Length: 279
Image: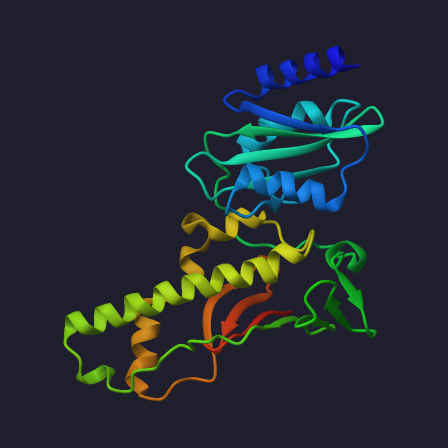
């Protein structure tokens, strides 16, 4: 069995170039949840492993690894990608006899061409909200984070998450009195803050669901995909000129292919929303 498995890995490496096999960790029985994530964390360090969505956009580099596996009898049970390093990592969880093995590959890049955001046409709540429990006909609560909630109806899907910030966003009502350089610095500070908040919302909302959008989890972080949807300097300047802080800041807004509006909002003090509004 071990010889056959090693031959399979060798074949994958040949077909998956330019991916590089960098290691494997096996288990005689199925991995427990704790051990599986301990292995992922030990390899990925402080980075975040993002689950690959079979229904999402297919990066050629990722499929160079997965195509041979998906066509074999030894299909992966789960696949993750870690993008927060110079060369991305891919991890596939494969069956191995009575046990399992985690196989790690290094990719040269994540190379999908940018496409517009699109919601999947068929949404199965049992798949999309796999990490949630249903508490009513239209409401779901995350299994591990009770403050992460979803409400859904024919008009919208609304995610909300509350995590009060010890240092809330400061609003400068004297923006118009600043010099040009000071204004630019203020805008840059806000953009840096919103980048952090956006990443937090991606982990809370996008990465806690499955098969909701066509973008893979890592595509949301890429400027080639998200740049046109992020809050602009002009929008921030217009907010500052009013001299009064808004109830919330819409830091990401785009119209999906099907006509839905997708918005990420923050109040700057630990309350976050992702709202999908149907046309």
